[in-house]
Length: 92
Image (cartoon, rainbow, N blue to C red; front, side, top):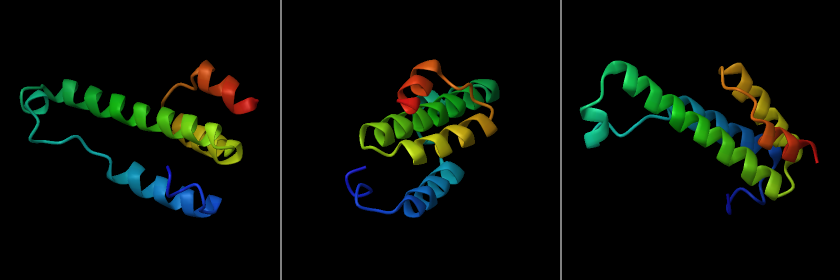
């Protein structure tokens, strides 16, 4: 986030799209190797949700509410619930 503070909104969104499309779990981790396909899917879903929530929180803390709302819309499109805590902070 430090390097992104001085970037334009379009640049932040480009980086977001690149990360979102390539986000994967380390296949060499012991937790991943021993997991069933359903558990692996749940692990990836939890990782993506954490990514979305962390990015939204960082954007709000750094006065990027407009971009945070765009990320929230993408989060909802990907099938994640719109958390009330993030929603309230984003609308401030």
